[in-house]
Image: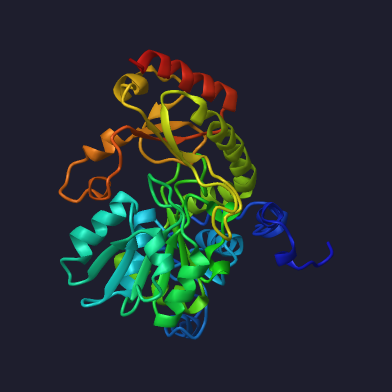
Length: 387
C-alpha cells in the first residue's frame, strides 16, 4: 500500500483507514486485562520512572483504549486524547485538573444540567466562583474573561441550542490567559472542530454520537499534548474514572460509521426544520444550521420545539409511537424529552429553571428511522393532543 498523508483525507476515510490491529485485522483487539507484566527488573523500573512508554495498569492505560484515543484525536484534529467512563467523568476530570479554590469560571447559559449541578453542588462549595453568561456576552464583551481561569462553553447550548462564535471567544480568552473548554457532543467532529477555531480543549459525551448505538456510556477529551498529559497525570489515575477496553472497542466501531450516521441525522433534521414552522401548533424551532456561526458545518439530529398552549404535552408524548420518552440522545432511536419533565427533576440546582426554559418546549432526538415515518408520528400525535 502506498504511503499517504492522513490529514489530506476526509473524516470518513480517516476513520475507516486508521487504527487497524495486528496481522491484518481491520479492528483493534480487545485487550481485556487489568495489568501488564515486564520481562525484566530494568524494564519495569524504566517504565515506573516514566523513562519509557507502555501499559502498566488498565486504570491508567490500555492498548484498546489507546487505539480509540488516537482515532478520536485524529477526528477532532487534536494532538492527543484521553478517554473516560462517562461524559461527566470527562467533564469533572478536566475541570479538576485545572481549577483550584479561588479560581473563576465563566460558563455558558443553558449548560448541560448535570454539568450545572457539578458547578453548583461541588465546585462552588469548594471555593470556585462560577458565573453564567449568554453567547452574546461571551462574544461582545472582550473583558468578560478578565481574571477568569476557565471558560466553559457549549455551542450550541443544551436544550435551547444557542450558538456562539467560538473563534471570537477564543481570541478574547487568549488575551486574558483564560483556558477554554467546550462540550462538542451535539456537533461531533463531523460538523464542528473547535480546536481549529482556537478553543483549547474539546470534550464529548461519547455515549451520544460517537457511540451512536445506545449501548455505551463514555467520555473523551481532546487537546494539545501538554494539556492531555496534565489530565492523564492527575485526574485520570487519581479519580479512577477509566474507560474499559470493551467500551473502547465499541467506540472505535462507532467512529467508523460516525460520518454516515450524522448525514442521516442531518437529513431528518433538515426536513423537520423546514416543515415544523408550518404547523399551527408550533411557536418556535431551535436548531442551528450550517454557517450559523463560523466553523459550524451542519445540523445534527438534536433539536427542540416550542409548542403553543393549545398542545397538551403529556397527551402528545403518550400518543407518539416511534418516538420514545427517555434521557440521552445520539443513538439510532428517536427520543423526546419534554421540558416539563426536566423541570421536575429533583434537586435545588436545576439549570432549566434558572435560565428560563419554556414549559411547552420538547427536545427531539431524530434517530435513524425513515424521516417521513418520524414526521407522520409527530403530526399524528399532535392531532390527538391539540385542543
